[in-house]
Image 1 (cartoon, one colour):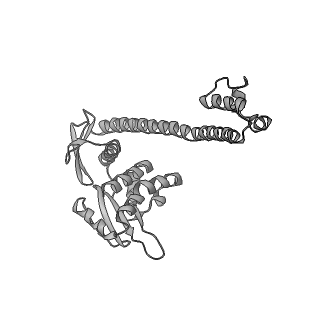
Image 2 (cartoon, rainbow, N blue to C red; image 1 turned 45 degrees about the vertical axis):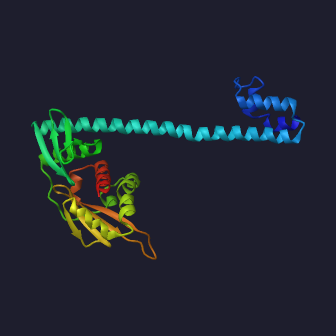
Image 3 (cartoon, rainbow, N blue to C red; image 1 turned 45 degrees about the horizontal axis):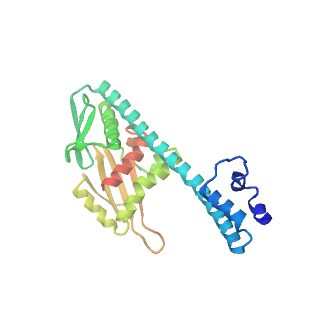
Length: 264
């Protein structure tokens, strides 16, 4: 018995049965105490005790790893929803100050949208449904910029890293915008040309295959796709005209890129 105590003596498991820091005994502790007191002399049961002890320690370890992650995810999800609510409310306020009109209409990628300021509703007319949070915020921000006066397209394509001075945004841009394009078109880059049947744009001499889409009027996006070869895997990149910096903030551009990738 002393040998087992040496192994478990400093553990929370041992303290649980001795009036230590934790006075509550789990079912595992009860089994352990019974075996320790009744049959510990047998080598087989000695090994069983150690197995029970290890199972409990592993269970506690997994709980410490995954339960905090779960609650962090919940907090982050709630934070994102709250951020959308705040951003949407601010966008409506700005739009109402700039254009207190009943309804505005515009095209976003392949669909036409109606924006009703009085009801604070953004509705997709092509496939009647309320716009999602991300689409609605982009549309409201674009309308606000257009009412102030859109900048002229400069014809200078920038990668995300070139117009964003915040490196921390790039992983989100890569995950939302680039990886889905590689997954869908990397094996056959020419398939991306089929997008032009649904979304206004044109072919571009870029990469193995490239297209220029008009996300909004005056907001072009260039997509390049490279197929895999003997040296490199499939790849893709998305570029925007320099003028986009006067229309959208960095966060909006990440969201816009993700929406484009999702819709192609």
